[in-house]
Length: 558
Image 1 (cartoon, helix red, strand yellow):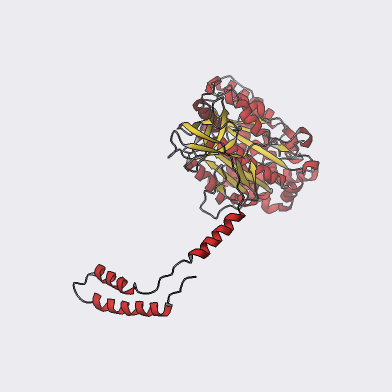
Image 2 (tube, rainbow, N blue to C red):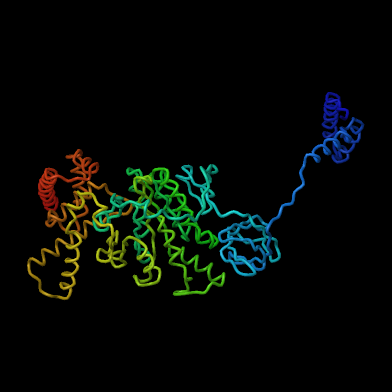
């Protein structure tokens, strides 16, 4: 090889020149550029490394002799149109639906339409820098997202890329977004309660593990709060959660994430975010990505809850893409396959039988209505797909009754099978009592004279309605719900002023937790309510009610 330079001689020369340069810099009117040029010229006589050309040529010939010539074919297309998150590409005769293509900027797209002479692609990133005439290559791959335990506690986009400024995600594996739902042979009965921590829902519209329960209502009726409270209540229930925010404002999503973090729920929750300013393709893919992540956890032997917030934005994103791709519009301008869009998503929620693992994936899709119109296209579609619906009333929300559950229109097709025996024992007639209350109240508003029995029915109904109210983000344990609902349905609250019911409830729970903690723990553990326990609770209720009323009278007198 070439002669190596004398390093010691080189360093000594550089050191000497530095000393001389420092002396010259202290002198006024010194030309720095001329000084540096002079120093470099004086050092040019040192030997420079030269390559040994014959040896390099021998190595190149040896490497070239080992190479095997081969021909590689690759499908390419040409961009004909691009804009608004979609692109039309000519060529690509071998393309398949849901296959990925790569643009010159590195952005990927997914094939959604196959025509005779072109394909339509939705972009999974920005379209800046993509122009007509650009070459597009086919990847021969379908879109996959990372799944694994490492995603728990993280905030990611629909492609599985982290958004929380933490370490990169090391996925256990990658899975396709579109997967077949479990067959009927793999499924088991839905008979295990999924407690939401909300008295109005656990008592009137119980949700079972593996169920699909629609949360529907107008804007500002508390749909997201119901879903977030349900996630918060899983802290002690060993249920993993996935929250999918679709087309929401970033401030709304950040507020929900902060609520989960303060409640300690981020330790078992994965948040998939596709904001309103993301490309429509990401909003379209977000619920499928979240469902794929949740399915992996279910197959690992865990019960999982997934919230889609909300499918109205999801349908709007799909409608936007379909209109841009020139698909024929149907009712309300939605494409004809909008029903299949949501049915193939929600069918993946299920309760597996013991042979298939025995775990569950529970889905809580959220849907927004316009002025309570339940007969619109999307509500009727999703009601027919799901196993029940929780209808939130704008009228109740405006009267500050939250959660604003409309008991008359809300239903769970699983019913009492998703309730513990203790809950069924105390709320057997609750729905009937509320329905009768609403009916007699309408007559009373018309000025109709009512008898004492009817007035007593109205007083009891007012207190039942007050008991079902609950502060936001404060879920209750099943035993506490049973105790409070027992006091309401058996008339122990009839003597309590309606405006003081919440204060009495708070004091009563503090009293029972201090007096009988073992009883409350036993109800939570077994879900049973024996006759001895009922008698003990009734005795406690009667004694504490009298004591509380006497102290209230004394406070008012003082």
